[in-house]
Amino acid sequence: MSASMTEIRWHGRGGQGAKTACLLLADAAFASGKYVQGFPEYGPERMGAPITAYNRISDVPCTIHSNIYAPDYVVVVDESLLFSVDVTAGLKEGGALVINSAKAPASLRPLLRGWTGRVGVIDARRISEEHLGGYFPNTPMLSAIVQVSRVLDPGRFIADMEASFRHKFATKPQVIQGNMNCLIQSMKEVRLA
Amino acid sequence: MSIRERLSGNEAIACAMRQIDPDVFAAFPITPSTEIPQYFAQYVADGRVSTEFIPVESEHSSLSACIGAQAAGVRAVTATSSCGLAFMYEVLYVAASARLPITLACVNRTLTGPININNDHSDSMGARDTGWLQLYAENNQEAYDNYLQAMRIAETPDVRLPIMVCQDGFITSHAVENILLEEDAAVKAFVGEYRPEHYLLKQENPLAVGPYDTCPYCMEHKVQQAEAMKNAKRAILDVAADFARTFGRSYGFFEEYRMEDAEVALVLIGSTAGTAKACVERLRARGVRVGLIKLRVFRPFPAEELAAALAHVKAVAVLDKSEGNSACGGPLFAETRCACYDLPHPPKMIDVVYGLAGRDCAVEDVERVYRRLLHIVQTGETGPRYVHMGQRSKQEEVL
View 1: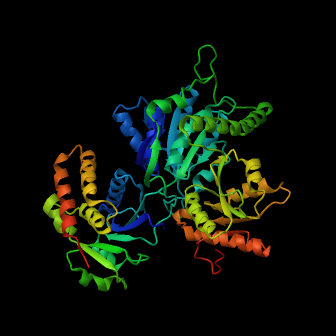
View 2: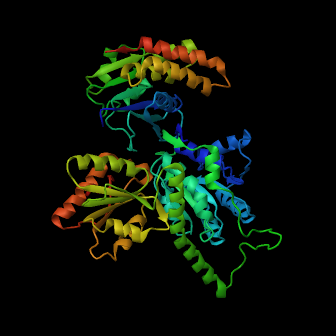
View 3: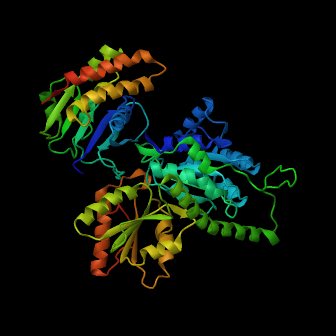
């Protein structure tokens, strides 16, 4: 794809919010003036089934309407998918993978089917349980991929997300601060190796 | 002044509906329906529209309710998808033959079976002979723009036919993209009020709708309906011209993309046209003269115009996103090939059935089709005329 376009593929399980995170990233990129696509690939509609979602973020309009086979970045919202899904398939050299895990990047490498590029790790479970009181991994994963990919300016992203949450959670404002804390802490903690 | 937004295709249609504020929206509110009635029901609940929203127990009933409402003289709309459209089959003909300009937002999804929910065009292609006008969209912008134009086309006095505004299920319906929306007042002014000349309970001249039509008259009524479908061609272009003047975006029967000096071309419908445009650019950068025609209007079929646009091309691949089960190609191939029959030197033509039940189509897939066309031009041999792209069940992989 053209140099000005970033393509991101999300792997998650139904119910974890990978699709929502993908659409939030599209929202944030749109707010910063980009051309965006955010779309899920639907398989069996049940909790826990592997799902894939995609983002294209570009400075110029993009007409392609296919799935993404050679992503610049991959986000793995559920670590257990590393055993069953070839998450690094087509991942570009020079790209990166961000995995939700409490483990060190080195200990995950053997599961990455020969991927030798950059691997980011973030413990989204701990962060979300600490700030939201439950397991909602998508918000920490969202800011981790922004931090690693720099597809958006991190400062601008945080400001846009606050506005987005105020809109999205207009009827339950008590969850806004927790989600913001998740975003900020995840950006600080994500480790790249 | 256009409004810069990002919306899914479903949201874009629901937004257009809210702006138009139709009199009646009847819909079956659960699977296989889409998010369109859900978003619209929220507008009704929030008091943002004055529409009578009628949740019914089936799609046969939703279209029947629209038929009743439109016959009574108001603007009625519905939305459906896949087997929901199939369940309307009987009443699709009733709406068209009663000359009721109902608007149906169709999110194209495959028909069962095997059970599958993903995109292809088998639902609306199955309804191609019902007498409905059909517009198709490449992206969310086109879905929105087509919807804004639909009612004026359908309600044109010498047309008066129902219209389907189709878009690709999931690929555009559930994908968030940038879009330009128009202001509510500008949309309302463009679409205008619906003032039918005749309706059921018009005091001075009441009308019967749907009575038994005896043999001495019924065929004449069918001929009038066929004439209305022909008249729709002018109405489509007139409305498009006014749309371009008003909002600055141009539409026709189809879009010709890099066709001016193209040696080979695709004819296709819907979102894959965007993917194919990226492929055209890639090949053009290497000096290969390729182009494509993206059909926006399938009913009425713009046969003469399409033939003229393909007259200078040496080889054409028609991409059919539905399997017509005719044993000789899909519906778009049948129409396109027929349209080119009277050309003095018709291009060689193949049918590539692709994307069934959501099978993805990437830039590289489109490139294989162009390579095949270039090979046909080079060798003069058409080879297999009707193939399925990307399938893994046959040993021999032509594409």
